[in-house]
Length: 251
Image (cartoon, rainbow, N blue to C red; front, side, top):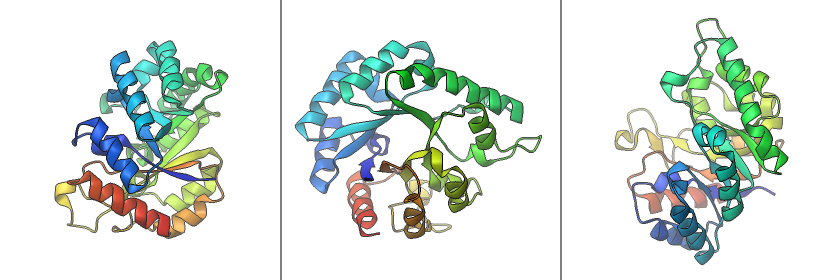
């Protein structure tokens, strides 16, 4: 059964965390997704755990950076246990660290495959979360996302489908061809051209240009467990959270 969730990064500019979690529970969320700053130290993890419990919220998925995944795997496992995380997604690769050819992206996929081994052995899911750069061909004509998955045969995919669109690709095609990898989806929307410039061109789910009704139907053929609302720069996070959940539930 697919459930809705909320990426807490969307509310990073609206502290404190306790108020954010209370708001999400009030508007109807039961799941949230964490990101790196929330696990900065043991005190923050304990605080997050307490606030989740206070608001009857779960954190089944989480973004954790590559440095921590590779350098502090024991800490990652402790965080996952403390917060009830079931699946970890590596969320990003800085521009200066990105490979420039297909071989480099395949090697990066192999690196992720190795990094995820001990988490899979511990019973956790492990995968990659995309942006748009993985859909822009390298100088030798390779799509990074394809090479990455070639190098990481066991990697799950948290598909951020609005970033797929911004990368110039068709999300339905990628769902058809790579749906077996998809275990979670970021649900965000793109404003019509020229609109919402003060929100980086993103929109509340159901108010933009992404055909979420068709995409949701296609996702039923995948292993998607969680559909996670995200907005990179909302002016009002409660507006975004509430509007997006209502529109998603109506699809």
